[in-house]
Amino acid sequence: MSEIEKIAKQIVEKDKGILAADESTGTMTKRLSSVNVESTAQNRLKFRETLFSSEGMKNYIGGVILYDETIKQKTSSGKTIPELIKSSGSVPGIKVDTGAKKLAGSTDEKVTEGLDGLRERLAEYFKLGARFTKWRAVYNISEKYPSELAIKSNAHALARYAALVQEAKMVPIVEPEVLMDGEHNINKCYEVTAKVLKECYKELNLHNVNLKGTILKPNMILPGNKSKDKSNTAEIAKMTLKCLKENVPSDVPGIAFLSGGQTEIEATQNLNEINKINDTNFIMSFSYGRALQQSALKNWAKNIKDTSNTQKIFNHRSKMNGLSTSAKWSMDLEKQITA
Ligand code: 13P
Image (cartoon, rainbow, N blue to C red; front, side, top):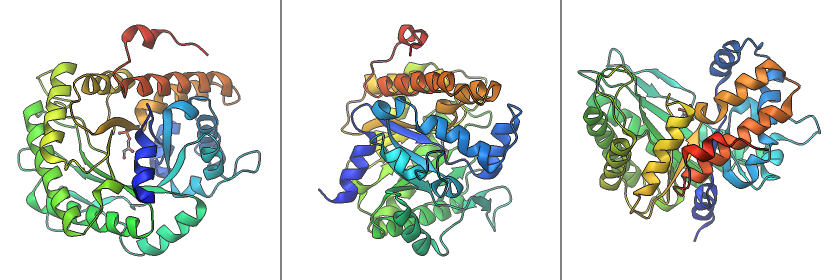
């Protein structure tokens, strides 16, 4: 097994998942403002350092995705952030796209940018300690979208990104996110996600990406957040598993879902349900941003110095998600928040 194949497995196996802490400064500013904390580089570091130095990292977080600012910061004890993450047995990762920008040729759609100069940036991130990376493409569902153009151009960029990352000896996380915004039902989400995944794997194969050294970060199959149809967790799990089975090549070792606007408990419960019925060889895990951090951030904002309670909340969330990767989560355990 090659080094990148080993890393891809290490990040998601044994009840572990990924902490997506790669919010850009703009997004982090929105998150901090929502809890009335000023978004300074120091405050962004403090919150993240609180999470990265918690106990929950050791058993349940196999990898952390960082933002450019954070990977270059040092902790209060002088360690670099990648060193702090490694000290918990977790792998440091880095978001390398430069964001979703207006797609020329389509009125309301986006294409993710960041390929120019990527080879050089990857070499720098490797030196800083990163061993995996993330690139996120976004697709909106509406009557006429996503267009063929958005599906094809994003898949092409994802594949060029993934090939460059493997050349730099790191694991690419391939994230095609079909957004949950809208009135569409669960069947529409299924249909669009299937199309998007098919095109992504067509391009990844064309670009000779070794799928065994990648991780897929997809959305779950859900009804739109303004849909009249509500779906239960059993239906979500069944449709999600079916869509992945039909469209993801079996060489892909791990699938780490994004939370995409689900509540913390929904994200955990849905993953638990997926793992109850998972009859594939894919490791089904998580790569959550909001669903791992929301409650911890709210608590931290009340008293920045109270790291212990913030870590307690983060440890609990990490553990609940860790349990859901082997279908061992339950609502009873959810309520037992301990040390
Ligand atoms: P959410 O889990 O908050 O959707 O974030 C995951 C992520 O990294 C999006 O790119």
